[in-house]
Image (tube, rainbow, N blue to C red):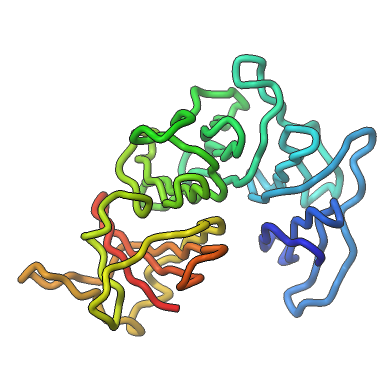
Length: 260
């Protein structure tokens, strides 16, 4: 890879890498052996920026064409792309994608419009989540997005230097980083306050089962001890330190854990 921006393991147990410099989706086996790249899309400019899976298809955000490409794992061919209607901007700038558990609604972070586009299982474009700006619930430069099993949607925003949280219906919950709620976070192992994010980009969801028996519950000033969080997120910070931040959350209350 020259400039890998997203990675995904498909239902066929191949590793797919979106590479903006190669302008291709590269394929590897689980041992790292290079297998080639997905075929070119006839008559279309191609600059892949993000990946997700839905209905046994690999969805690829295509920044140059301003749309979402669809590759069938089973048929090994490209399907018709997902193109935004005029009211949604016609061309979009996909930076990150996720599929909501349950109803399979596709979420697309638009890095230019500053919204999260939504497409339901029937292919209908729904009202976007958020709006461009710095007001509560606004987005400036959204990057990656995660839809969790327990409901909340999390978005890294490089412009706001924060992680923005919405509920499953798109209502704003809270913002982590930026100028908000820094007093609620403790940098693990020191007495220093958490300094926040610098350029948050990558975002990964991790189930609590992967930490069971391997991690002590976080410290808390509350006399009642905290249990292990329901789920975790790992946030990649392009310029900040630590470069990876582990965050555990409890329903709509988020508790941070910070390690390099």
